[in-house]
Image (cartoon, rainbow over all chains, first blue to last red; front, side, top):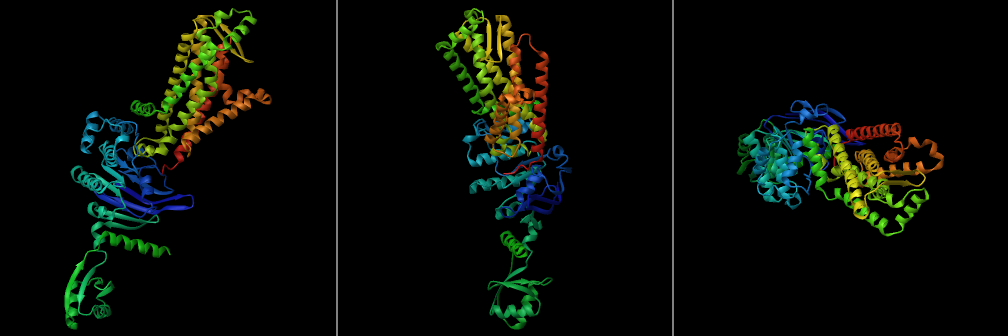
Length: 301
Length: 278
């Protein structure tokens, strides 16, 4: 659905994206993660043909965005950066205006979308009277108007209250499950991404530092919580035997490749060390992300 | 699709209050000029000029003459100001507000978007001139009687017309004033496509206008008048010459078309090369 190949973008001397490649399959909910200035919005801007890449190929729905923007974006709905509307016009009129830039949209379709996002009854009020949550729903409505196959959402939960964020998250999942939409989703909220995304790409200073399934991030380091009679002695021995590669804090160890928990337990029992608890620990996306960022900083230094 | 897009642009344009500032100020100015002309020594002074040239003043101090009296300052100052303001807003204001990002997330080419916006600006210019022409004769005839037309621009024009001819020349001059308004809107529109604030686009457009105007007034440049943009903006004056110099009208119109196409091409080229980003 989306194919970025070695996309580089320079703003003067600043390198915003460095040979960024990304492939988003159909029906995926793909999370784009990174700190402020990592290049997420630049990547989305390039996908929408609003920012010109310095180098690389950008294909959306099979079409080259830089050469055939009209076909590439024909089935794309997007919220790019903070949604902005014509505040002095009604929500409905805003939708009619924005729909006009894609194709002729029937009043029935506009009513359907308004109902879908829960703005029925307020569609004739001026947007300046809308709450932040209502604006976010109107933004989603405009993205839904052209019956898209691909939704690109740039931090859609930004500025929403916890209830609004929950609502937005539920809506994104619903759109993917009920309508089969492919969704590219950028967010700062790692728990949100962990809950709804199937795949993620992590950007750091314009470079991709990870790209894969969310499930893989949880197993990237095979940590085990270990409560034994003498943790330091156990770590020393297990390391010497090549069963673990490291430890964290005073109760966790990282298993070596091809080593499973029973082998560690057997060794500890052979040593005659009392074993109180051995539990595999699943790494959270937050831990994984922070680790990537630290690794990125270290590499940069 | 073009209809839907133009309709959308017009909804946006006429939905905001600042679009009506130009209409309001121009109508107020017309009213003030009419009242000033009626109740000061301005109309007797004009009467003396007419009588000094052998005309019956009463016959020419008409609603139509007053409509032209009020048209001159408006056409030179207020009309360029307000159309440049709207032209300067067309793109830059949408960039500033962030609404352009919403539009450009849709499958419309930048070129087409600019053409639709330019057309909406042109519709505004036509409506503003139509209001200026319509309310000019309305206010004029509220205070003065129907009659012949006298047009006097010191050092440039001294023309008299019968009532029927007067209406015809007045109508034609306002039609050509549309070319003036669209061209000034086009200057503002071009600067609006640059990476500048809307106010800066308007100021740049007005600077371009006034620099042209000032240079045109310098005696040294008299021989080079036809190179100046403002010289051709004044083509509406030509409708009061007797006989109308149609070849000059055609020449000025052609030059203005050239200017407008150039402004649009420069604006499109600059806008096309830009990254749209907050």
